[in-house]
Length: 144
Ligand code: DQA
Image 1: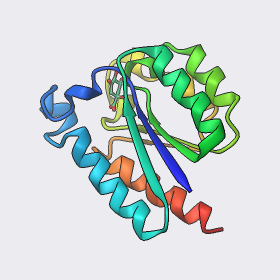
Image 2: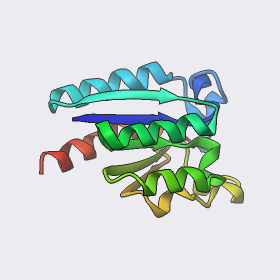
Image 3: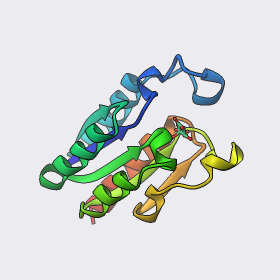
Image 4: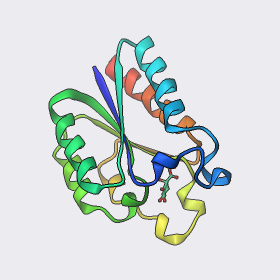
């Protein structure tokens, strides 16, 4: 099956952006690690990133037809986007929410997530390993 990994605004700068918070690994590194894990379990990943909310919504709509699971780091849209929550509510597969940093240890405005109301699980503060952990969980759930 396909696992769609979605990334919100500013994550194109992962590896360069505030490395003391987000680390030095890039989204390409994340994709390679997740693709290897998925491949071992007979699945495939498709990773997207956008700074535009509508593109993320369109990918979630696309996932309705093609993906068994969505792993999403909505970045700042986590804390603002009812539209992404609504799109995820119209999706029937597995949803895991990932945050590289521990959002609960940071500013109060990062403590609330609109997406968590739909997520089957949430990972925060495990660095980019959080993506791999989420993919691992998806693979074990898909295996039944
Ligand atoms: C983030 C946390 C968000 O609060 C922030 O806006 C991001 C990244 C994380 O991965 O830790 O851009 O989702």
